[in-house]
Amino acid sequence: QVQLVESGGGLVQAGGSLRLSCAASGRTFSGYAMGWFRQAPGKEREFVAGISGGGSFADYADSVKGRFTISRDNAKNTVYLQMNSLKPEDTAVYYCAVCRYSGTRRSSVQYNYWGQGTQVTVSS
Image (cartoon, rainbow, N blue to C red):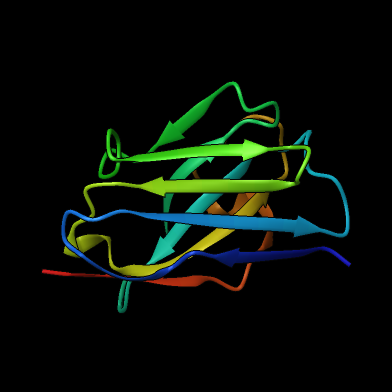
């Protein structure tokens, strides 16, 4: 059974940092892109960052570019999201997901496995 478990969320002041982790189990995902999405209350789920299966290519939403860094350790079947210079508008539940393809995608419909989410709250 495939399972994705996120961790590392929490409460942080504006300007602070958090590092999210997503550990996958049940199968190996080294050949598939992985992504992070987020959903704030009353808003649709949005793409945050994606990384290719081999880890050589990363894609970021404009709103987080230069502040967030996605990485992966295929030996550990784990993907990370380092979040720096956090802003109150980054407050959301963050989800990791496995893409159907080896290249990154921004649409959530192209991801077929999802974690349960981890809350990130940034206070002003």
